[in-house]
Length: 112
Length: 115
Image (tube, rainbow over all chains, first blue to last red; front, side, top):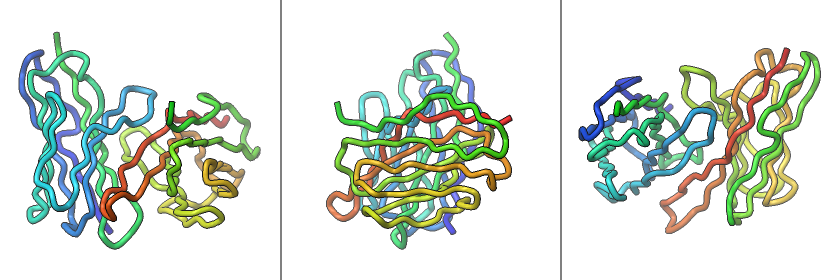
């Protein structure tokens, strides 16, 4: 069974700082990996999707990378803003099934 | 606007009662999913459905039931057999694109409180 880990569980940074969120998975045979944002009491909003054949995806200040061989993905946030404060989750879809596996998330606080 | 709707946003029930959570999507997605989210834990899969009239149990299906009579709808019933039903419930859907995409989209969630 795929296991997905996100460390740290919480992160606090001053506004303007660049930061990296980490996601590790145990089985490298995945179709894709997706990063989400969740605000308190809300559903998940998709940020970036990386297919297994890709190494990175970019959207605005966000850049997600994927290294299947090491079982790792990172989400890079440039020039962080207070509005970036939220919980960030990663999820991967194994080649062998139709079930997504989620990490427990990293709670990010950007201090003005 | 295309998207996933869940209703109600908040739901209160007394212990021993069954309750049904609604999930509707107009994205024309084939697959739909129900997750449960508890504080400090990741999302846990309850049930998923790849096509109409077919669904599979996830990791924590005990005490829950679903139906998929229409492509657009995937209601979840929390039965009295579910020992700890108070949680945040999230519905999602996904489409298969290029054989390797499966991007997931989520609804706004329903917070169920059972007392």
